[in-house]
Image 1: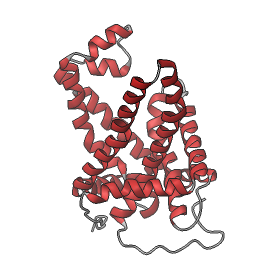
Image 2: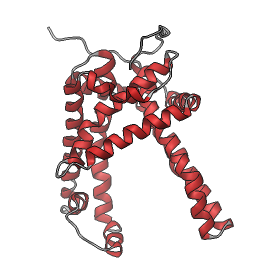
Image 3: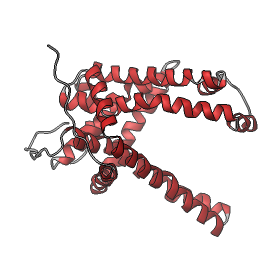
Image 4: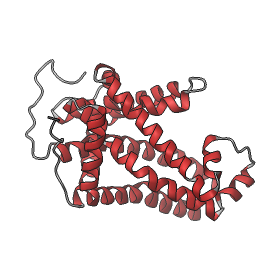
Length: 277
């Protein structure tokens, strides 16, 4: 007999916005430790990306392994501890093969989505994504303005959605529930589809805080200030803002996982010397 499917809760749309608020509250309590942990995570991915020939693919394969460090830090904080840089490589002490399999699934799924776009545009998006098209900035603008290429991008994005949903909570399910890669991917996809209202609200909230608000702010600054001053303000304001948002979204991976797969669970506080380190 096979094992029982992993249980999950179904939530209304309001939970998607609540995930973002909760994640930001966690970041706001330990701002510096989270930023340091995130920069360690980013630097590790950057180093992997430098590997000749395979780095650009390997970075996505190992990403779930390193992302576990952020999940472990959120787990620790939720139980009264604090996020620390030493948690970054916790994934290496977990089921690393299952995590690598999730990363490989992501790479294959995204590659299929991009490859399938050739049905729409004859392979322009595929060649553009692979870097096979050498072109000037003006040529690139003309290519991106092609309606067929734009439709191909939309088509590819739609095809990529199942891969994104399947891999969203999969690393957390491997680490916290000892699921196999296949079981984790299947459970993540089922739970995401069941919680589509919360996911839509979450994506819309990200679009507002990550795209709409910065665009409005930059437009206002461009109208009121000279170009040089706007550039300085972008560095002083928008760069920190983007870092805060990016870290918050990574914390949200854990917050949303907890809400969907452990709804209503009572947390036991950490005892001295315990925790995910």
